[in-house]
Amino acid sequence: MKTYCKHLFYVSLLMVLGACSHEKQYRTPDVIVRATVKRIYTSTLNDSVERKSFEVNLSVINRSKHPVAFWTMSCSWYENFLINNDYVDMCTWDCDDNLPVIRHVKPKDSLVYKTTVIRYDESRFRNVESTRFGFIFIDSAWCKSHEDFENILGDRSNQSIIFWSNPLFLNDSRKK
Image 1 (cartoon, rainbow, N blue to C red):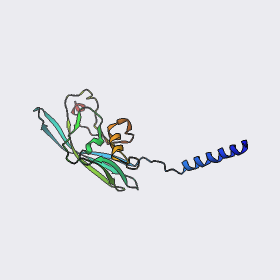
Image 2: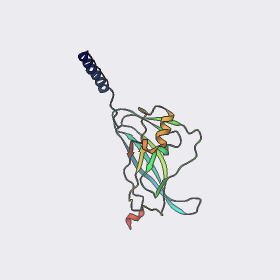
Image 3: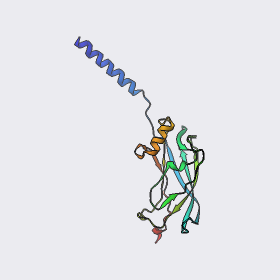
Image 4: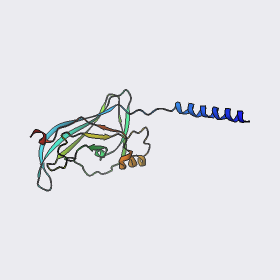
């Protein structure tokens, strides 16, 4: 009886290990983010203080041979982006019918987001010379519902894939 149980245990173990080895391994998509300044100008907000503004294109580029699909909001897509310093903010806007959507990017293609960022002169961390934009990639392969998307976007500890852009030098203090 002991021998039978021992063999049954080993057969069961091999079946479990064999089943696990056939599971697809998740591969991080081959995606990059490219930031490009399109225009620089001075703007005045409600407080009448002049600030430097930058029109920026943020391109999410699929460098792989396979399509990629990720979640964003239909209007407030900027929620999927982070900025690495405290002296630049992305301008936001009010959104009607703002819903979670899945965006698709074909192989060797890109999706371009156009935005405006404002540089503030007062900052605690002015020594950070470059501005980088981090794209929170929420893959539709493992995020299956609107609720999953909201939980990942809302809880930063669940944001495991962030693609950072090339640096932009928007801080004039580095030239002084």
